[in-house]
Amino acid sequence: RKEVEQDPGPFNVPEGATVAFNCTYSNSASQSFFWYRQDCRKEPKLLMSVYSSGNEDGRFTAQLNRASQYISLLIRDSKLSDSATYLCVVRMDSSYKLIFGSGTRLLVRP
Amino acid sequence: DAGVTQSPTHLIKTRGQHVTLRCSPISGHKSVSWYQQVLGQGPQFIFQYYEKEERGRGNFPDRFSARQFPNYSSELNVNALLLGDSALYLCASSYDEYNEQFFGPGTRLTVL
Image 1 (cartoon, helix red, strand yellow):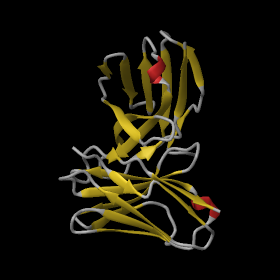
Image 2: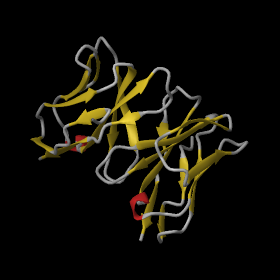
Image 3: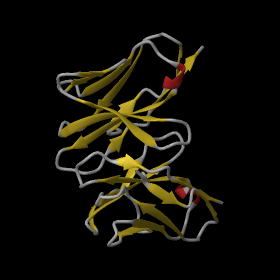
Image 4: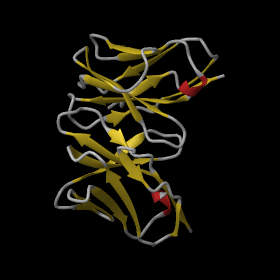
């Protein structure tokens, strides 16, 4: 079983749509959680950290459910520029390494 | 401010050859991590260095090695290249072992 699992998509949505991505992680010792964005043939960039109480950054909302070992990312009012691959990432507090999911591809169409 | 830089950007090698990839971290950052990203997958951790010492190693064979220099730049070496080593190799720098990691643009290695 992979340590971090994501639906690979692709999710193909019209501009203005709301889209949600889910991610599950297998190690209950995981303590830090992130969403990264990766454009085609580019490096990953941190989109947002995910906190236990949930957090929002503009059109983006991240949620964490430790009991279910589940992380989500909600994007409201999708823009063409949101088209990218979204990577779910976890890290255990005692560790330095980031553990990435395989990513979910999003395509926003006009 | 300059971000993480990596060289070369692209590289083509044949099976059995060796390769050296280079990374310069953001100024002031003392930690460098290396990741391998195969097409269609997320990045996979290879090594982390902090203050010139290896702090962690992922599940990669001994053909992979790395080092960090006094100026905090780093090299990743891969010997006896296999076709399966074809990937994007990403370097990430951070102030220390646990702070946010900033990724460089990567080196795309193709093994023929």
